[in-house]
Structures are given as C-alpha cells and as structure tokens.
Image (cartoon, rainbow, N blue to C red):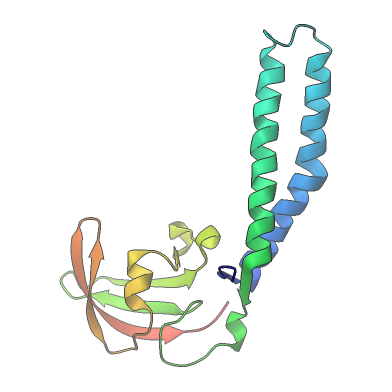
Amino acid sequence: MKESYPVTKKGYELLKKELKKLLNTDRPAIVNAISSAREHGDLKENAEYHAAKEQQGFIEGRIQELNAKLAKANVIDIEKLSGDKVVFGATVTFEDIDTEEISNYQIVGEDESDIKQNKISISSPIARSLIGRSAGETLTIPIPKGKIEIEILKVEFFV
C-alpha cells in the first residue's frame, strides 16, 4: 500500500504548477544550455557544460519527486471541513501560558509550510501535539528550546 501524502487543494495546485514549469520551461532551457555548452569544445574542462548537467540532474530529480508526491497526494478541501477538533487544514489559535503571547497557525502539508505565513507542517512537533485537541485544552509542547505550555483558544477552518 502506498503512503498517503496530505496536501491542501491550494498546495496541490502549486505542486502541479511547479511540475508544469519544470517540464515546459526549465527542462527545455537546460537542454539548450547543454547543447550550447557542447559547442564550446572539450567537455572535460568545460565549466558551463558541467554546471548545466548538474542543473539538469536537479531538474530531473525534482520532476520525479513532484510526480511521486502528486501520485500519492491525499487532497484535502479545507472548505469542506468543520468541527472543534484540530485536524489537518485547521487554523489553531493558542496562548502561551507563560508569556501570554497569542499565536495562530494553519496545519498544512510539508511542501506548503511557511512560518512567515503562519503555516506549519503536519509533521512538525507543534502540529503533532495539536492534532486531535480541542479549544479550551491546555497542553505542553516540546520545542527546540525546551517546552511550552499552551491553551488552545480557537479551531477554525478557512482557506
């Protein structure tokens, strides 16, 4: 059985867009760069050729990775979710008990996580600790600096 890869609808579309760009723009461009570099003569000492081949390897690897992720994707439409428990796609607002600082994060797939946009990966320690919890619960979360004690204030579902 293949492993499921959770991703939001928006995240899935971004992965498809990246794959399309790699296939239709980046791959042909690197093939042209390799062809052009070959025309410069001796390939052993041709830095342009070696750089282009290295870039080609990166592009081909990323294409394979994206194809695998898209094939395993379990697309979750956040607009159809509801409830009071924290699940994938939920936006959770919580308060740090010690500092009284309020934070909110949306739990998303690994490729979608972006701390600047308050999106954390489902596999992060914070997200793993929050999954299955409800508003009003207090819990201790392990973080790189130690532990924080939080109280969940709200669980919401919106895009």
